[in-house]
Image (cartoon, rainbow, N blue to C red):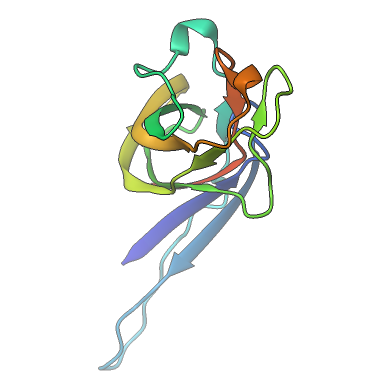
Length: 156
């Protein structure tokens, strides 16, 4: 049985991700004989792209509430990939487009199965309730967008 996985780490939702690939092969034990398998060596081409105005979330973020986050993922591979998690990169701050502080914004890690088709130039992942804002958010944060540094994990 061959299992392939691809881990994509990005510095921010609005930036292109750095990509690294991981392959593993596993044969259950027992018995005699020989076995062979091939694993892919070219597991690249999954990136997080800049979200544009038309890619806006369906909900608005308000203090003491949650809203949808939108992540745009491209897949230049010749096979579809499945994103299995989107997580906040530890120690990285959420920043506001207009520079307001404190943002009071946090990202709630997500798990699921979002399929990104082969050759996709940009598939939008809609993550309902993935962003929260607490009451410490500065008034100047009203009406702005936020950049959230995330790690995206995908597999074939």
